[in-house]
Length: 607
Image (cartoon, rainbow, N blue to C red):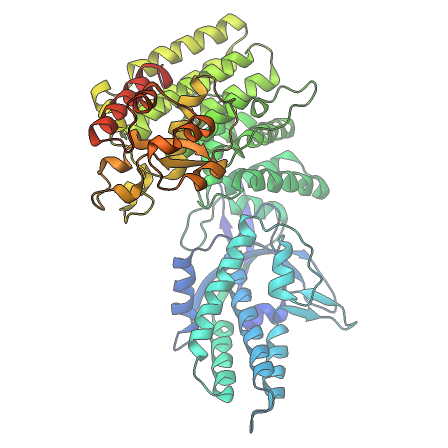
């Protein structure tokens, strides 16, 4: 039979119904280089467990779309999977859990009267045959070949020598799926006799193997590329990143080895972008923000069409766009990371992340949970690296403008919608990208400053919000209260005063400092976080060593240590010292709170 993919071509297709058992006995499978990573969430895994494993009868699992990538005369052919790899992978993960559970039964109940451990061992071996197949020469073949080393080492051959490779995002999700099924399987057999455990594990395996699919077979890899762009996987549309990956591999090269090289470059790029981020949308967001840092913004659903348009049919244009993404990934890797640190300088290299003040601002945006400015950060870092049109002082200035704006707009007042702000950052980024002279750069920065100033929240509102800052680590707080009183955020606030005074250099590691309640927390009148003892006006930043030694001592006896080990000894603290105060009063704390709020808006975070 055949199915129309476009008005210009008909792709020959044949199909047949198979059980998962047929699939894993009669075929070998591989995940081609343009495929998406493993991505099933707990919700999809729960559906699999309920619909497939707990099913009373055969379950129709949908279709798989494949082509024969390697034909063999006396052994199973290898089928590259265009659609359905999530289902086949999940089935293999479940079978690996059953195999290991059977081996555990055989080990755990050695010597138990009436129980033959060989039965459990033989069932484990039978299960393993669905994961690794042997040809007539005794050579082992993974039934499903995936790019993650851990899939072979953990799922298919747990006796393999570990490669030691770091788990990427896909590998982590495979590990999470395996942990999900381990919990389900262990719960299902808990409390059963050894014999009953073996029988129930066989029942679970049987239901997994009885699930049916329609295996659709195409004639060629080229047909696979075309079909991939038209398909949705079960329960989730293809992501932008899936489509872009397919586009670049297909359009960037025709030779198999060259396509693999493009796929390898893509995987390295994704590993940078994904890093420790857990959101499944992170790669799509990166592609969108990278685009917005160079070109006029488009809505995310329209972006793939625009990318397809700019690369056209030219392999060189495909590879040029891939290079764009690779360069931006070097910056994006460190965005939204509270732990970002200053990188060492390298001779002849203009690296924004070797500039302490730039890194401090990037860290601040991460602490504020601000990603809307990513297009501007990407554009600034790239312009600094690739040209000499923007000076080091200017990249510091731009990031400080963005940091100061979002301290007031986001961290303090939570001013809501970022739509207009996102557009403002996109327009600045595009203008900076297009700048041909130092004066163009200066004018773009001046305009950004004016636009951000005009969008600041009302001063009275920002002042009140600053005065409400507190640090009460010993109290039970709501999630919203915890967010506004996180140690790293309060430490950042206190450190910012010291940096402005020039008392400490940029690039401080906030984790090495502690927050001191000048009037001890033990003096709090209540467990209410609004008690002045928890207020920003009663806090100072000390070295961790000094903080642990001061304890609940009165101010008069620890004032000298406070002056030595503090980040910033402000005029209000000097007044407390002059008054020989043992424990500051609520009025003194409130006065200092208002002083810090004024200083914050008039100097520290002034645009």
